[in-house]
Every structure is written in C-alpha cells, then in structure tokens.
Amino acid sequence: MSFHKIPKDDTQHQVHLDGAITLLGNDLQAEASRAGLDNHFQRWIEDLKDVDNPQLHQIVVDLQDLKAHFGGGAVNQDTVTRLMARLGANTVSAAIFADNPNTAERITKLGEALGAAAKQLRGSNENTPAQDLKQDSAQNK
Image (cartoon, rainbow, N blue to C red; front, side):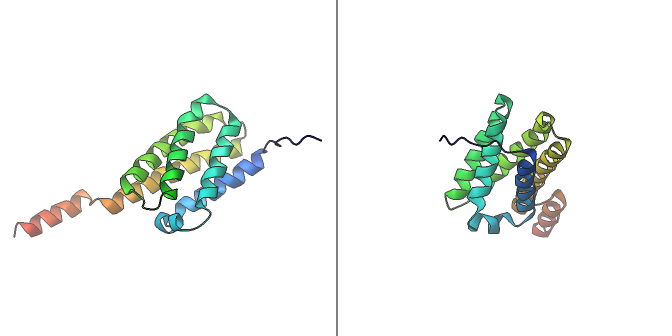
C-alpha cells in the first residue's frame, strides 16, 4: 500500500488564506509570541509550493525568511516591515495565477492585508510629517 500526498482543493487554500488574513488583522506583536504562528507560515508556504509556479518563488523565499525571523525570538521591525511590504505587492500580483475567482479574491485581500500590516508597522515606528512638524516647532520654542 502506498501513501501519496492528496492535493489540496481550492476550499482548503481558501481556508488557509482566510486564516492568514485574520491573523494579519490582529496585533502582530501579540501573534508573534503565540504558538501556532509558525504553522500559519508553514501552511502558506506549502500552499504556494503546491501551485508549483516559478513566478511565486520570491513569495516563498520571503515567507520562509519571515517565518524564520518570527521564530528567532526578537522581532526586527524594519526587517518584518520590508518583507511584509514586498510580500503584499507580490501577493496582489500573484492573484492572476489563481484558477478559482474566490481564491483570487482572497489572494488579493491577503496581499492588501500584508501591505496594510506593513504600513501599520512602519507607522508605529515613524511620525507623520505633521507630527514631525509639531515636534520641531515645540523644540524650537
């Protein structure tokens, strides 16, 4: 009797995409400290590998880097922000490769969620121009 990997159907991919979108909508610092984040990344990586499209290679590499980074303990906000911004843009672009429109829609939403999460992380690290101006004027008084 031989055991072979049963290919995932679109429904399973959509469930994984929904889980990733929900995860990105949560507090990422809190998520990083919880068990299970590693599994989210691994499912996502496996789903992409199942597609077997060389044009998705950079997404797989960035996800592996992100997974390793979160698994390493201290989270470098600049690294995570850079990876998530690039993942967001590449994920939105990858939606055209989905055969199922429902999957394509979820991939687009995931890419947008990654981009929004990157902006949120960047924003928590930087002041807006208005905040900078206010600080500058306060210091010059």
